[in-house]
Length: 248
Image 1: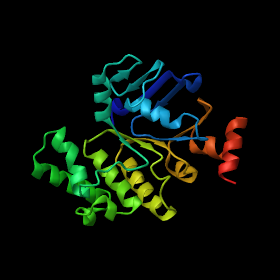
Image 2: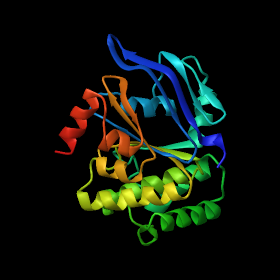
Image 3: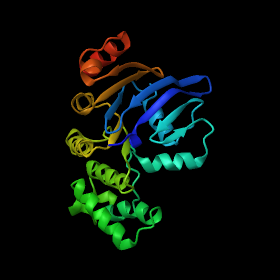
Image 4: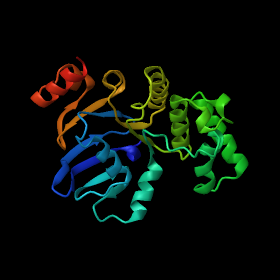
């Protein structure tokens, strides 16, 4: 893979009033890597994803996504380019309730890529097969389990042919059995060479599947490295405390 899906944050800061959410965050995620952002709630993990995607502005620093650079004063066109490179998947699925699984996946290719209805349907069908849901193509969201909805959301993000995915706690609302469905789907995408940046509380998944782990607390990176370094042998007191609590 080329570095067209490398992500670099340099001294990125974000505050809401007097509350500092990101405090000069710098990190690099190479093309094709799976990066897990872990740590206590409120540490800034989801804010990082939303800044990369342009859903949140930030106050200082810059974010490089492939050939594009985002700064605090970047125009909307820059954000649009980044969103074509990186799809985003949310905890609450955000599917259109009045559309079938197939129609949900077809919508963006028809609206944005201007595909014909037939071409969009063929593409959507192939993507539903890829996430193991071809037999649910004609089901509406209310007829699907949480894990199935999340896999439709993954297929919908893939329909725009991104080079990577930003995943914001996408298994936190699911039962354990359904989490396995979604996490195995992500592992398959990793094998396809996509860059995956995941905010997750699934520490065992991060240990097994991530190339890099970033542990955030209080708006700073408390620790970063391989899963073995951060999860199995944390060095900083803050990281040690968090890991001991979640693995207790």
